[in-house]
Image (spheres, rainbow, N blue to C red):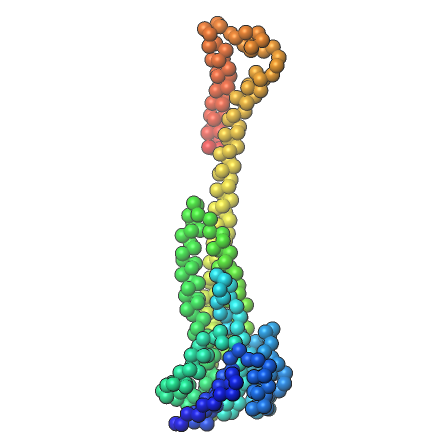
Length: 320
């Protein structure tokens, strides 16, 4: 069980029981050129390793298989998910992984193979195709901590959505974006597991269909979780919109009632503010039938009585 390690630039190589794992993080054109000198890979495949616009795909070539997969990683911006690409070359006795170093499970597995004999035997002891399965399985399993956190965020936002004193539209919008980003990354993976099982079998003496079937189940579970989260956040969005609309309508209703009730006073004050002769006005002299405050009493009653009548009508019609 001798372990052979080699490093050429950023290319790190591990060889165990006839299986070589080449790991390349943050590749440069020079690193890709060195990789092309070591293995007979097609030039277009090598270009795809450094391209950031490649879609998930599986290409079969004579003597090897080329796989491009995407998995989500968090960025420094809250709620923003970035798609990270990993390019994989699978041969009968080797596996080459090319990525930007953001996929922590890959780096962790490679380091474990370097330092731990048991891990090295478990990952590399059954051939290169089985190693491919373990890498894909680890990357898929790495989705679930993020999904669990997403579900916790949904539970926390639920209380805010149904609290009329709190505006949760920003949190809901951020979660909708995160769910959308995760769906765009995970959706292409749904058909990959079955295809990998069929095409990688050429490079393995073990039946890998059961293993990749388990990966497919995990991907479908992740997709189902996202579907439920999408429906939930859409309900939250609609609920928050309806509650905000109702709250706004209530405020407008109160303001409208206040404005309406002030119409008699405003109208009467407007008349008596005119520079014309009015009964009880300054020019004609105040009424004194009921004493010196007769005019004030009459004006007050003329303002209060219509207001009380409007309040009675509003309450009778159920407007307040």
